[in-house]
Image 1 (tube, rainbow, N blue to C red):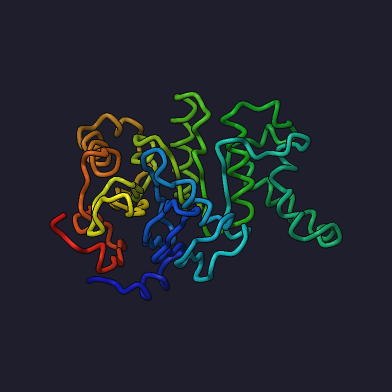
Image 2 (cartoon, helix red, strand yellow):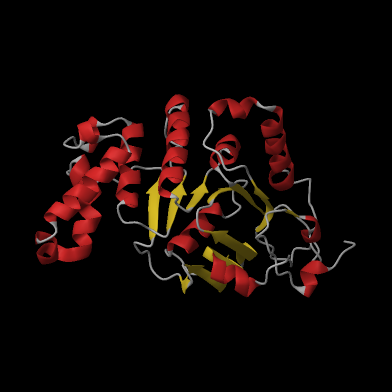
Length: 304
């Protein structure tokens, strides 16, 4: 049964409709539609220059769309807020604070100095709960420079989780890590996702990582065709050209060696990364049950 945009909006944690983003004459995002329900772990990939970072900043609230709707929890996205947790590739820890103080900092800040005085025990217990959840209890008094890169990212996860965001935004969170540590944190993230039933929007350039961690794979690409033609006057930006539901699992990494896993990665490469494979907008692989794409009459034209 096809759902209406209004039905999807009501059912979604993250909702985008008819989103355009341009910088002067350059169109980066072109009529993007997306509905993400609670508990999904959405992986977003795409070729260089497709606008992944731009889309991420729109959801975070660092930028505004040129036109269209972006909402979280049914409310229009405003400036960055605690309802959107974030973990970046570069460690976001305060170097002069211990692990414990880094994790508890957001809770204290939200209540101010006076408000925090009567909640010290509550905040302590909350911080320790999440520090234990990311398996760093014995390191709670260490400073960031005393931790490995993987440990620092686990602290960043605890920082985000303690604020109980509606959605956790992750921008290449494991990109700076060695392959072994990166794979370990992929598994660890899935364990946390299952335990806390999080909604995650995960941006990565690594297709293997995207397919492994995601329950849904989104491909944003500028490589497609539509009824607007291909002349110099066409200011075409990226769209979501592939949207597929993936198995809900937090399984062993051996799945990455399976034939069907490798085959899906090749499908993704062809659908969004090959500049010579230009699917028409009416042929996009949008199999996810919540996919929707409100195309304009001009975009829908065929035969070019």
